[in-house]
Structure formats: structure tokens, C-alpha cells
Image (cartoon, rainbow, N blue to C red; front, top):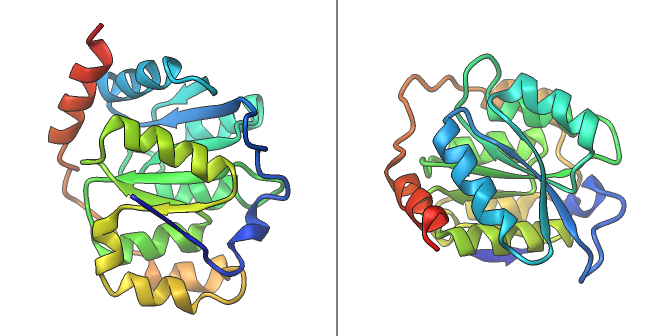
Length: 198
């Protein structure tokens, strides 16, 4: 994982969480065992409090209004409303939470969609649980976190080209793409194992 500065992104949350403060987190994933495993792992991390969970994008929007988390850990592919559409809605009014996107895919267009929608970072699901926790802390403090693999794609040039806040409306139309394949959950089995271990 690497944190990078993206021009314009600092405007997406007015007040980043100060270092040393408790970070409230909403975990969003449609697979219950994975959602529970990540939430359980994070509950054991000092300085992080899981204030809610959601099983899809629509539920995530409602839960954000209820609990006002600092960070939303958002799955990309979900029924009813996917992570990109939910992120766009959640970040439309302020001050919004900062959204850290998770996906099994390293497709450049997916990263673009997430950033255009308002996400502040993007991790692949093969990230270790400790890495996800570190990314949550960095995201809450106003930094932008990405899996190293993503920064080897042309997406790196896209990130560096952002010199103003992303125009989510027009760009979202250009970048919209449907994904029919189910995300590979193999790496999350390891997360469940770690979360259940003493």
C-alpha cells in the first residue's frame, strides 16, 4: 500500500480526523461472512471503532446518515446498488465521510469510476487485514491510499492529472461500466481465518 497526494482531493472532507483520535468506520460488503470478519478484525484495532455495517449500497447510504462515520470501507460489487453509485450518493453532501474502496479487480476503469464517484482510495482484496487497517487510519487523516499494484497501471497518470475536484456528473457518464462477474473472494477467506484466530 502507498499513500499519495492527489490535488483537489483534500476538499472532499473538511476536517480530517486528528491523529490520535478514535476513527469511526462503516463496513460495507454484501457477503456476510466477509463483512463480519473484517468488522471483527477492526474491532480489535486500537483507535478504530466499527459503528455499523451494510450489505449493499442502498443500506450503506442509510447507515451513513444514521451513524456519520469517518471512513466507509466500501465493496465495489454489490446487489441493488454497487459501491460506485453508493459512494457518489454518500459524498454528494458534506461534510461526507471518506470512502476507501475495496475490490478483487485491478482494472484501471474501476479505479477511475471509484475516484470520480468520490472515493479517496482503492485497495485490492488481497491486502492483508493489517494493511486495510493502516489504510483506514491514513484515509481518516486525509491521505489517499492505493495498492501498489494499481500504481503500476496507467491510472497513475490519471491520478497525477487531477488538479481540481473531480466532476463526478459528466465523468461518471463517460466511465460507467457494468461488471457481470462475481468478485473472487479467495483472499477474504484468509481474512476470516485471521479474524477468528485468538
